[in-house]
Image 1: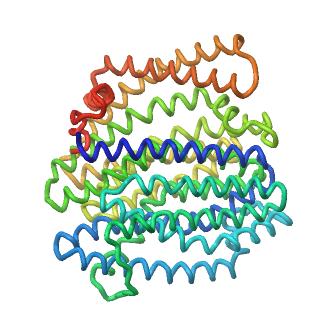
Image 2: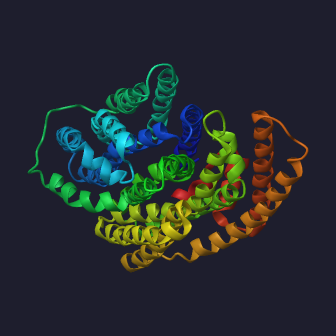
Image 3: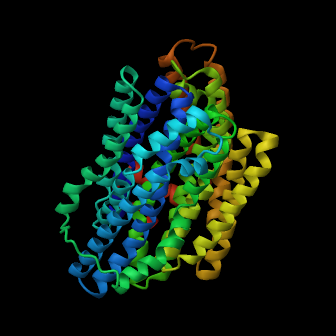
Length: 519
């Protein structure tokens, strides 16, 4: 059995558990505060520091992996460790400065992220933002520790950090109901800190040694500083688009902001399960293959990774479109979360989820570009896609309302995918997306057949099974189970290489036949 495959499988299992707990967290939030003012303000205040440095932190991690590997190969582990400490110390100082500036300038910052907020809602958001801004220090450190553990091939630990985060927030929500919503904000700050602290013992176990070293004149630090801005835009395109959507959504009302947040949580669940977990494992491998000058193996690995993602995501996308209402109803509709909130959230989800596939494939190609030390190409393509997203959002918001924001984002995602494909073919002549297109068509046909069956099954069992939450879960679970079975059967006859390997992996108890997928 391939170590890469085993790591991917274990990480996906851990991610499922972590994200289920995350959905439970969002369900508790929905039950407690629905789509009201507190949910919208909390969402915005939480997004500001996370987006401000999650994007930069993610870019740091993405840049760190190939540069660390390069130093180990060309120099020594000690040299790479000195570079890592220089990055960590620089990040802490920069984050402290940013958080202080952000606290002082919280009012204009909130206006950028939520231009529609006024009066008490605006003032509340400013207050919450100031409390949460110091969390960017922990976000930055958590991303760097995650990258280090991935370099050391410890993929499961970073996948677990969402668990203490979710548990702390759930407890904070429950306490806030009996005290004050501010408790939820303070609890969120502690939860973000927990993401960093959770990884510390494992980081030291893998040989990390802290030093107060900062060498901004180090050539490799200069390389990272050159890389970081393009990578921020390339890696952060998805988050930047989400910020644009929520910013414009604030013009339509706090309930729209909250509904977007819940739809995005479901989107992020799919993304983390099928994209983040896979990329976390294969990206360090991409980087290693390029360093070893195995370009053809690198390209084959990238194409096959994209095929695996297509196989996994297409049925999920179609399934979410068909079952959007019952999914949102089961997860969120109780107490403060009303049926009209379910309808709005489901309407956003139906459109928004279609963009997860192009973003996923773009993410794979972005890692491909970074592996060959090209950060400018994904940056350029992402800027074009982001600009298109803003233009389309502004064009669609008036005729289509909140659904127009989701539609603009989805369309710009597919245009961005086209740009990435074209650039990759120019950059690496060995790259050929023909295999991806064929696999996509076969998966789409299989998923559409699945959709017909699922629609029939759900419609047939609805009159027979009437009741509360447990009955709704049974109906939804039965429909999903039958849909998955139909997709699996139809795909078997489609003769897709990666699917056959996945099937053999499942049948043989995770054996080495899947090795080719990520070799």
